[in-house]
Length: 506
Image (cartoon, rainbow, N blue to C red):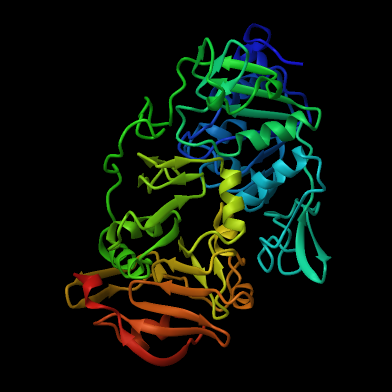
């Protein structure tokens, strides 16, 4: 049965009142306001504060949502409103992080790509998602805890299985009661378009999961139009139960509409400031690993800046991000996952299918902790839950991985000159440790598929071998014993150590 817009037009508050207690609520979006139905989330919060309902929701989101303060899933961060969160990334929602840290909610984190693909599989009626993605990491029940983030979280969401002698992970199905999604416009037939959004994300997979689970799909859009061209319909009306037209909806939390973000105008330079100091050194050294041709993924933070220092022919390189973006000028800060003037925007679920099958040639990713087995942690930092985002999906299925991060943290002061580095004070937090707190990247798994793995810091470059982590380069001005080995929790293999190229310090 199809609906016309007049049949399904609702206000945000009307949608908020239709969320039942105990529902499994899936919400689209990515940090910075990208595709986040914030006015619907605000309506749910308003109802809860007035009536105490809805209660005991299970919240599911693939990407990180929020503005780091009040918007996005921060609006649902009230004790009693939510009882469980299954999220791909948590950093944009500090209020929800606090609930998880204090044990007031059950907290899980799973890889972003896995979550989006799992919703698609649930919508297709299949028995969860069966994949090698996550083997050997903290989501693997044999080497980790299945994605649980705190002591009140007990129900396993992941299990191992063997098919034709090969080991896989099975992520168990999630039955979605309500999906909240966002688009640009809706037509008089109730079809929804994402035409003027900077990404499509996993909107279709979420709606499919809710619709075919017997649930409901509610969307927030900026405007209505008479009719949408068929090729511009992201969600046909058969998948939509209610639409809230919100004229104040902005493209991102920065406000307004930028046609270059949706691919309707040429790209323009990023507003983000290029890295300086040792982060610039890291980005410039990592850029030397950029291939002459191929498909390249850029991660968050300093790794996203690598492309600015790479000597590449843009006609031979395809840059991409997990949100489904290709080429253009990639944003590196709060709007990570958006590009100015992209050449293509595809659903994030399709992007992760491409990644999972080994479609990338190289990826540049961040690094919070590294141990002697080559394991990397980016998902468990301090007491607050962070989550991996797309890190596991990307790193575990790419033939060459370049990790980028400072050698240590908190208080480090280093002068950069054309002839190398001069350390004024050391950081108090070690990042090269005996054992990482949680395995977000498994060195052992990388060895089984013969991946090339490089770890770039400002003072030393390491590689991964079957015997462990090997030291390959140190920066000019750095003493091996005093400035490198004395600040590591493991002893690397030391062979022929060369100097880092002088050009990265200029």
